[in-house]
Image (cartoon, rainbow, N blue to C red):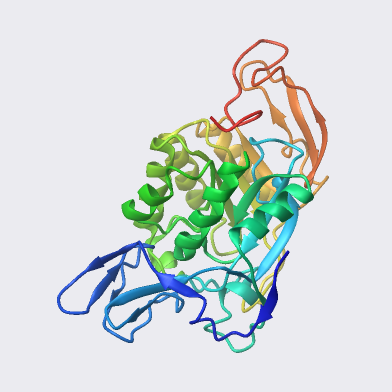
Length: 353
């Protein structure tokens, strides 16, 4: 179990990082996220948690700002071990600054004095112990942005693999080729937020769209199971044009990638608009289907979105997984195939490889 609560001065809970390139003198290039921060000695990256200490990149290690056993559907993964539990762990910090962040207490805690959260010293073994004790089948790096704490995630994932557990990221997808190759041997599932299809809006969030689109393509090409989420915010990213652009991009990568369109509620610094209407989610699912996507789901409005929480066979429309919110009501699969027509159903339904 976690050993002790620790203060927010976390620089002692660090180790030399792996995702780094040496530049001239003691200057460094951090390759953990799409910002590719160039760091002089004493300088921190945009995330605030990775820093240059006299020519050595120091990165977060062996603590958690959140440990919780969640339904895997909450991440959300709808095509991976339905009905199972996922031990979710997170740290502090993010390379984005989303005004509507629903995990802002952890993601923005080093940038916003209003964000406060307790942190706990913990080892990879203790996280995996908790996962096994509570019946989890997967350990998930989430709550803050996991790409910027990838060295710690890999230590946890290596221990998880030794114990036969699956591994996953819940990420903004603002990655680099270096971080994806670093994660590749250890990760089974990857959820990425496609927050908009506007480069201008991504710059406002603190990132760039092109890095996210490249990460989506790369994760898919690596054979890691990928699901995408778009939180639809009224007047921000819910126009027909933008929804069509997102859907067509995803379909161009693969028509089998599940796309979750989810409802916004006012949070953090975005309190100036109402919740996402049901009709917006249903309109988005129609655009996804028209673009050729086989699996489009509506989220955050359980029981209100017709049948768009369920998984159906793309070939014969047989009901495969029935859901209400994060609750799985029934599973009707024959292994990893449809029991009606024997068509394979993309996903990781039984195992990860």
